Amino acid sequence: MNKLFAWIDDRSGLVSATRRALEHPVPPRTGWWYVFGSATLLAFVLQVITGIALATAYVPSSGQAYDSLKFISEQALLGRFLRGMHYFGASAMVLLIGIHVSRTYLMAAYKFPRELNWLTGAVLLLLTLALAFTGQLLRWDSTAVWSVIVGAAQAGRAPIVGDEIARFILAGDTVGGATLSRFFAFHVFFIPALVFLLIGIHLWLVLRHGISERPQPGNPVNPATYRQQYDQLLKREGVPFWPDAAWRDVVFGAAMVATVVLLAIIVGPPELGPPPDPSILETYPRPDWYFLWYFAVLAMAPHHLENLIIVVAPLIFGVLLLLVPMFNKGERSVRRRPMAALLVVFIWTMIVVFWVAGERAPWSPDFDAQPLPAQVVGSGGPEVTRGAQLFHEKGCQFCHAVQGLGGERGPDLTDVAARMSSDQMTARITNGSPKMPAYVRVLTPEETQAIVAFLSTRR
Amino acid sequence: MNSAPGSNLQPPDRRRFLTRLSIALSAAVGAVLGVPVIGFLLAPLTRKQPREWRPVGPVDQFRVGETVSVRFEDASPLPWAGVTARTAAWLRREDESRFTAYSVHCTHLGCPVRWVPDAQLFLCPCHGGVYYADGSVSAGPPPKALPTYPVRVRGGQVEIETSPIPIA
Image 1 (cartoon, rainbow over the protein chains, first blue to last red):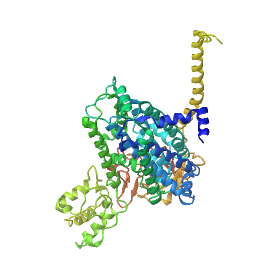
Image 2 (image 1 turned 90 degrees about the vertical axis):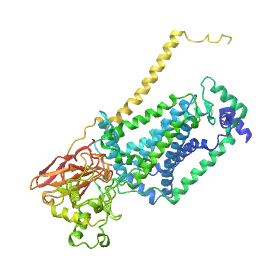
Image 3 (image 1 turned 45 degrees about the vertical axis):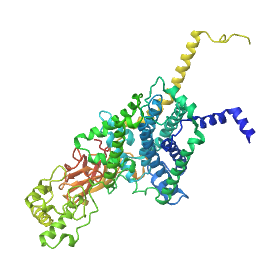
Image 4 (image 1 turned 180 degrees about the horizontal axis):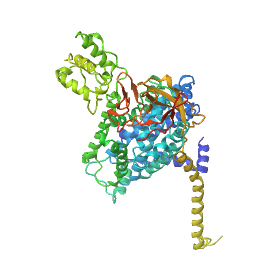
């Protein structure tokens, strides 16, 4: 065996090169904070493997993808499991790259001489999001079709070239036969090829500069002396990457894979929605969880800022990401960089807050609101009963709840009579507001009167 | 065998020429591969899709004052488009002879609006946009009214002209 390895190494040099890479010295006490990069890589490998498996059965045709997905999910051996793996693997990859970029930013690992590590990582972050978006669309059901349209509509907000980008996304004037094939090609060939290339460069840079040491307050990075200090640290206290530091990567990576497997078995892949027929209008399109927070941002944005948020905010985010390594000197410890800590906390809080909002989507009308039962309406006379009925029929209840029954877009009206007089209610119903239709166009005066009579009993 | 290092180099002028030749040839190969691929990918931007009048049902099928969804096929669907070749519109019969066909796409971000007949409103499930029966905005984020499609009556059939998805 050893002879065989020696022969291979003599002819290829690969064994000793791999050994050198694995056993290169790393700083001591790196700890568990350093596992997220390798875990992101492992999640990507998982995606490549499960993705190739799924691609052997998936038909990337606008007309047939849905049926092939049904086949994979319902009939193919292990198909449902592989779809689940690919979905939760994608979730893991997005989450882990988010944690990895936060960690390297908090520990200022992007400072001299690792600026290019950051920049290649930043591009990998954007490519990962591009994979997440295109991948969600390959689940070619009604939601996917509408996601393409919503994506195109957002791109359409860009000045001058908006229309062209939108048509590029749709592959034409409308969703059709050309749309899915292109997304498939981007998702499985083009973007992964770029990811492979950039991971290669990223890893090359990690080996070239070494893993950054744990930051120490009061030990700022000085480009003139940093490399020398780092070399001395490695000589003095360095440990071989394999296995002294790598075991944590392996343990964490294995735990991550186990989690993905368990979720794929227990929770399973997202259910397929209705077929990708753009003429089916009773749908409720919403993105997968990793973009749900952005969906919420778009719902809650003030109207006059909307174009700014859709077009300018992502550009600013991209530029800031690229500007980070400009600040490549000075303190690395987060204790001396309070603004950095604040920024990371702010971004994660924003995402979680908007994510929770997106999960509830209180701005969406509740199309399934059931008529108010008699015990809620009470016995206020025939006009009140009629008003409660109209309250449901005329769509008030899509947006307003009474005792928890109805939508959340408008104020809860359980005790509206305690805060509004019937004249005020009549005026509001008749004239509407920026958030509410003017019902003068919809209701007769008698109907308005009945609804107000009903609402006046709500206290 | 005993020649000094570098003695078998070409003359500097010739080396410069060979460098430039190799770079130029590589660039040409790259262009030969790249230009057609990029052109192929950008083709949808230049291809003008035709417009077609599509029948959506006999005139008598629609009642005055009512708004219903109608479905029709895109102008020139690819053979493998399947159900994605379908499009819908909200068709309102204004009076005996006039029809209005509203786009189903919310002007906010393109989601499918739903007509709620009792409330006489179009509601968008995505971000809560609301439109009146005439397509004008009544509440929520939409920046403008629902676009309309060209519609006509021919030989007792209501026909809608296919249109691109309205992009803001």
